[in-house]
Length: 216
Image 1 (spheres, rainbow, N blue to C red):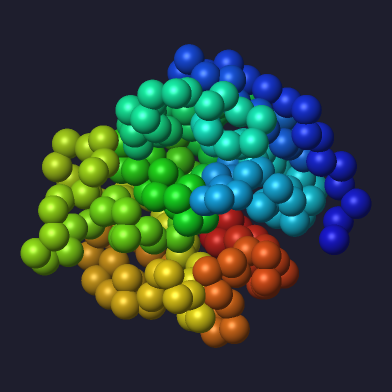
Image 2 (image 1 turned 180 degrees about the horizontal axis):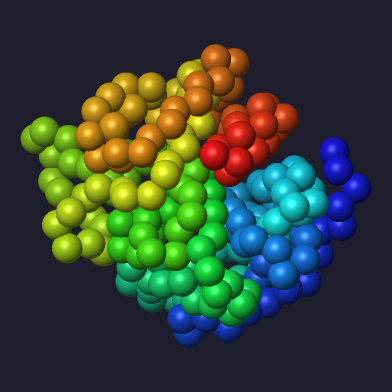
């Protein structure tokens, strides 16, 4: 692992909540933002922070309701639209004036997908776990429409990488079928020995795929 220092004690007041985040690298570098899944927190991305802090301003927040971030009592406060706006606000607080790369896993992947549909302009690249089980993203025949903050167009119009552990028993590879119809610029990398927790099991492969994708 890289010797890049990871700083844990960062906070930002955004969208009426206080978000804790860890960071690595200089704020003057391109921003790469990592969103964790359930039931994790920022540390899920510690190896990615150590890797990408060498070339980027790498940031991993505790999403609202997790670890050291605010925990609103009202269930409605956790609607996807609020989580998306948390990402918007955090990017602004971090001083991101240009575009940035957004990476998400599990529920963080669902939020990243929703963000890409609602706010494609600030995104340079998108890396997600496609979370169809949460009904966020393209609809499946016979199922209700996706619950995303969008105006009918469910396409993701930014370059997108999906890294998939083929031994994932929660999100089966069949979820990838037809995804290219909604993501015109799509790249899929499969890790045969990876499960749902591929970020932890195969960090070097994940980092390599991320590096290649960001490099274009």
